[in-house]
Image 1 (cartoon, helix red, strand yellow):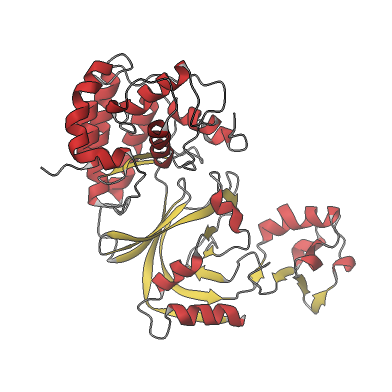
Image 2 (image 1 turned 180 degrees about the vertical axis):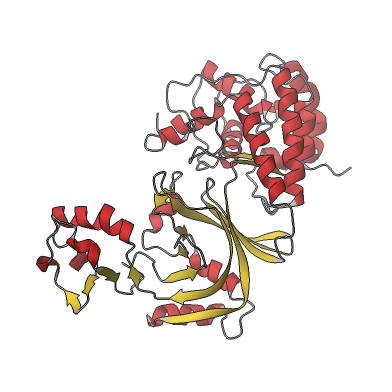
Amino acid sequence: MSLTRRDTLLGLLSGAATAGSLPAFAQQAEWRQSYDAGARTSVQRSSTPMLSPESLQGTEQAIAAYRDLAARGGWPQVQLGERMGVGARGPGVVALRQRLIVTGDLDAAAGTSNVYDSYVETGVRRFQSRVGLSTTGAINRATVAALNVPIERRIRQLETNVVRLRSWSGNLGNRYVVANIPAAMVETVENGHVATRHAAGVGKIDRQSPLLSTKIPEVNFNPTWTVPASIIRKDLIPKMRKEPNYLTENKIRIIGPNGEIAPQNVNWNSDEATRYTFRQDPGGEFNSLGFVRINIPSPHGVYMHDTPAKGIFGDDYRFVSSGCIRVQNVRDYIAWLLKDTPGWDRAKIDQVIQSGERINARLAQPVPCYWVYVTAWATPDGGVQFRDDIYNKDGLGPAPVAALQGDQDI
């Protein structure tokens, strides 16, 4: 008998899955372990596209499963007043085990020990992977906040997002790119499977990345960066008032009607600077676009690009841009984009980047690109996924985990 993780979740939630029903968990443990033991001892990444019939079906079934779980009492709240990891002991660990068992992140056979062992660590990793947190396996404030999101909110998230998934249930193309903004993640999809997946940096709450449907026609290597007017007003002018050498140090030139203007000749205490063009020299080590810009036709003036600040991709909170999307491992991404374009294999890409030359590569066939907003979905091989409603588009109020973005350690 072949059973998917979705089947496991449904079977788990169809039982008496409450904090006080550990005997019911134990009765299910033996048959679950016979085919799903691997799922309880590792963190797996789904190869199923988020925008796919399988994801839509999985989300519809997750709604039914979560409604059933809510009718049976939902899940227990965990009260953890200290940082926890392997070796910790106490009643909080027992409550944590029960919480992880309810949502299938820990097998019921793991028992009720008050010791934070490797089984609990793996269960925490699996849970963290499903809510978009770093899979440390240790408890911190953000993990506790996500564990304690009420089941009613999770159900409403699923109900809201299944409508969004249905709207994308048509033919998106054989090859396409999806940027899911609340997940700060980019997927490339080919022949119904995820080809590559990339962490992303997306728009801040007050400078949101837009939703759009377009095609990628071109990749720019070693680009210059023309600073948008909004960034000149909001960022560059205040920066120059505090750090007069900022433009020079970052190789940003001021261009006026008659040519280049020296920074010291601009009155930074007025709006004079807004009348000029600001352009940053090419250079992947310092240019805000890194080594590559991926052009997309859009009325919003946004695009995708590399970044010299690659450390952001290791952060849970990646809502850091002014609307454009920064892509992790951008060479892998553009290699996939250009794979059907003659003369642009990976060796050529690396050679052009290293040369520092400004070269544009037109795709032989433009690739569809969708920027979407999905905060909850489910796939057969990845479980039920939730992300913070960072732009408050679900209408459920502030996201509890996002509020802890700068304070994740207890």
